[in-house]
Amino acid sequence: MTKTLALVGARLNSSRLAGKHLLPLAGEPMIAHIWRRLEQCKEVDCSELATTADSFNQPLVDWANEQQIICHPFEGDVNDLMARLDKIIQRQDPDYILYVCGDCPLIDPEFIDHGLKALKRSGKDAIMLEENIKTLHEGLSFYSRNGWKKLLAASQCTMSREHVGYADKLTPVLDRVAICDSGDYGQISHRISVDTQADYRFMAETYRRWYTNHESDSIVSLAWVHQQLLQDPQLASINAHVTQKAADKQYAKASLYCHLGADIGLGHFRRIELIADALQEYLGIGSTIHVLYDGEPLSSSSAKIHWYQTEKSLLNAMSEDKNPLLLLDFHPEFIAPTSLTQALKAPKQHGAKLVGIDKLSPLIETLDRLFIPSFYTALTDNKVSYGWQNYLFRARPNNTKQRQVLVLTGGSDALGYGAQLPAMLTELDLDWPITWIQGPLAPTPDIPQHSNIKLVQDPKNLDELIAGAEVILTCYGLSLFEAIYSGAATLLLPPKHLVDLNELQRLRAENCCIISESLEHACAMLTDLVTRESLREALQTQSKQVFADHRGIKQLMEEIKMLMADY
Image (cartoon, rainbow, N blue to C red):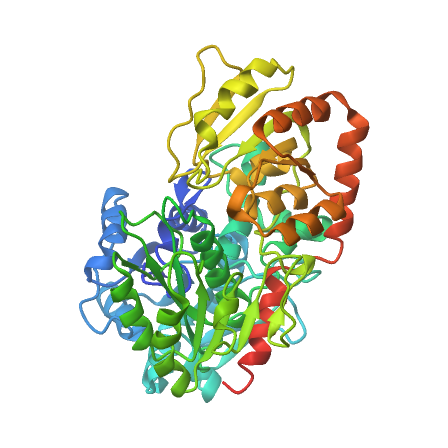
């Protein structure tokens, strides 16, 4: 009797999305869904998790033990995937091997059985799809034991040891049987592996949609996913921009520098996280984030973050940086431009490209590019890029606007609106519900008892809340333009020192938001917005017009790609 072994390769050390195998999908770790799918395969006799015996992957081993899944962590070279798998194969002694990438939670049981049956009938080394067949399937390799031996013997170079099947691409050694697909999966091309944040957002949304209408013990149908992608371009667009990294290509590395704090706010850090994800997804550029923050490290989805408690330590790291691309996002009122210029001398001398974000015009002579995510600047230098198209937003959820007021005072409430404004809003006694968002660095606002204001602390779904609010009351900063971009009727709280008067005058001329002169004025205008539908509609219409040509992160990536053309 023959034995078929499924090997699931997984390590939490992914350079693009660390810890991805344990990220939740529909309430379970992503890798758990792979096992649920393998359990439905009639041609698979047993399965084993193939990971490594380093401390970083211990949570994965612990999960396997809890689920009673076979796992003997490999103690050899962590990058030698072929040796890791062969160690298991030698112990399990199977006749046929199915290799599964642990970042593909849409592997199709029907196709797996279809492929294994064809391989077993053929007596050949491996399978392949017939010429000209297009398919969604990813992350699967099928081998007879003899085929595995051939592949192992041919896997001599570093890349072929790290990537299953790479040796056969360099010099074909396997005798493959050509098979048809198990269904029609070729009407659309789309990536279904999870390598980046965008891939994870796509997969999380796909799983959410499925389990909204299906039983919890079902598995997400790949045929259903295929139809969803055909019917809903918005679903496909979530990760359509992601660049698949080639195994044999060297990609540039980037260092991203920023700061945050109670006075500075959280905007620089969140923007740098967005840029780091985009560099991976659009250009295949891996990033390390360097953050100046005299506090406890914040939770983050970004893989590589270094935290510095002193300006000196961050500047030292900058001066010793050897990466070919450096991006800086600082406010010059909180770090001396002369210090930054001095720290950038060494990177500039060894040819690094230097990109400043937003307020770094004092460094214009040192920078190669200054990208301003704003509609306004007084600068005329040809290194400068700005405009409504430049705002750096995350993907906007497609939520229906609800009759509610959202209050955004920034990540740290730097202007202290939380001390006085909640009582003033309560006294308005508006019919619409009011939600006050407390940023992660902001003090708790003074909301009176029996107020109609709902307090939400640092919500993970802030993008959805912004997308769903018809009226937004906000401070000056990224949240103001996120509100306008969302199509909300937006009211700006008194900006005080946060904005140049010329910029404020230009914003007023755009008629895309109401600019208040005082908190009393803000409350009066909020009452008008809630009661006058025509005023809301006028603001919402103008908000769509100012952002009609918005390109955002794509614009920045195109400019960086041109800058890095020689790398």
